[in-house]
Every structure is written in C-alpha cells, then in structure tokens.
Amino acid sequence: MTFAHPTYFWLFIIPALMIFWYIFKKSKSQASLRYSSIKIFENQKKPLKYYLRHLLFLIRLAIISFLIIVLARPQTRKPEEKVTQGIDIAIALDISGSMLAQDFKPNRLEASKNIAIEFINKQEYDRIGLVVFAGEAFTQCPVTIDHKVLINMFSGVKQGLIEDGTAIGHGLATAVNALKDSNSKSKIVILLTDGENNAGNIDPMTAADLASKYNIKVYTIGVGKNGYADMPVQTIFGTQMQKVEVKIDEETLKLISRKTGGKYFRATDNEKLKKIYDEIDKLEKNKIKEKLGKHIQEEYMKFLIPALILLVSEIILKHTILRTLP
Image (cartoon, rainbow, N blue to C red; front, side):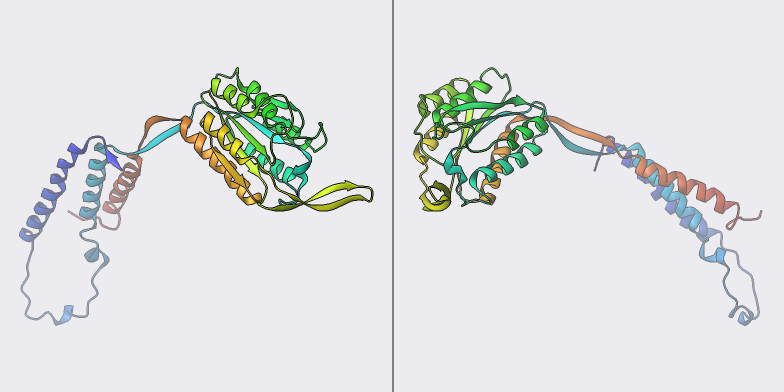
C-alpha cells in the first residue's frame, strides 16, 4: 500500500499532543477526601465506568488517526496487462497411416487431436485454423475466432481422408497460405508429423522460406517414441498389429523451425505433447502482452468507515453508559 499525500502524516503530532494533555489534565484533576479508615471500601466492587473511564479518549484518538490516514490517500497499485491482439495460428496436422501407431493413447492421431482441442479451448483471443496433410494437403478450417466450429472440424478429422503419404512441404505451404494475408502481430504454424517427407511437389525448405518471407514462425513437433511402435496394418487376414520402426526426419524439422525463428520439439507420449503445446503458448503470449502501467485503487474507505463507526460509538457511549453528570 502507498499514499498519495504522505505529508499529512505530520498531523499525527495532534494525537501525540492530545495524549500529553490528557495525562497532564488527569494528574491535576485528582480530588481527595480524608477518612479515618478505608476498610469499608475494601470489598466494594469497582463500577463499570471505572474500567471504561479512558475509553472515550482512546476512541477519539483512533478517529483522528483514521482521518489522518484518509487525508494521506492510501492506494494500492497493481501492474495492469492485457492482450491487445491475439495470435493467428495454423495447426498443420499429419493424418498419414503411421499416425495410427499406438505408442500414444489411444493412438498418435487421436491423442494429437484431443490435446490440440484442449489447447484451442485456452486461446480466448486467438484465431486458429486447421490444415491436414498426408500424401496431399488441404485446409480443413480457415483461421477463425469461432473455436466451436474449429473443434467440430477437428473432431471429424480421421486417417484416410486423403491419399496416404507424408507431404510435409505441401502441408507447411498450405498452412502458410492460410496465414500470409493476416496482419496479426504474431503468426505461427504448429506443424505436427511422425514421418519423413515422401510426397507432394513442394520441398519442406522451400515452404520454410515462404513462411520466413511472410514473418510466420513455425514450431515443429516430431511425434513418436524412439525405436518401434505397434501399428494396425491391413492384411489378407484382416487388421493385425505389427511393430513398425519410428522414422522422423528431425533434421529437416529442426531446420524449418530454425529458419523461421520457431523451435523444434519431440513428443514421445501424451503428457509430453501437452507440455509442448503449453510451452508454445507461453513463448508466444509473453510477446504480445501490452503493459498499460499501474492500476491505482483508492483504499481510503477501509479507514473512513471504521472512523465513522467509532464516531457513532463515541456519541452513543457518551450519552448512555459513560454519561457524566455536571
């Protein structure tokens, strides 16, 4: 707590002088009577007024002290920040067959969808869009502030919507195209894949150059545990689980993020992927908060109200319990 006019604290000399005068006055106003014996008073109970004889003076001191604090204008000051403009985000999601691997629960694709939806629900001011890619890429949902529509579109994403493969370059270029005309202060692509670029007619680094040209930052996420993962595979005997080697082109993903000012992450389970989204959120949000100075809140009522209550109490006590007769 601070005070707008601390010079008023000099007025505390008034209650100090009052205390001095009260003690001096009381010492000069003591009356005395001579008695041959005081035994008759020894068992007499002292009246309530005896114990409360200084109460009115103490109340008056408290009232004056509170009023001096009110004059000094007590205040609290809190830094005020607000998000003046949200981020424009395009989530580029790999929906190739390998995303059905079950090293995530229930599998990579469903885990990626569920965690992305959790992330979307936290973004109050951000416009977010969805691009899906496998052997090709297309915009599932343009960037929008209507997150309910976006989540509904997310829910409908499944493997097999487009030809299989992993067209990382095409997926990134489609996401850049969704953001290039935005005038937002911060534009990012979150590109999530579990494989190597093996389809499409756009090289991933060419797409990265395009992103850099439009000041779009790309955060890349490699999804999958090291080694092998169980994946459902169609055979003549139906769907069977097979161990498939996890192959992620981490070098390319790192180059993409480095070229665009983003960052590469590796997610090996659901919890790790969730933490990656949280980290991306913090990295971007810290850059678009605008400090508006300090919000000042007057706190004088915290002292004025007790002063008024004490004033009323003094008046009541003075004319009732502590009334003095002339």
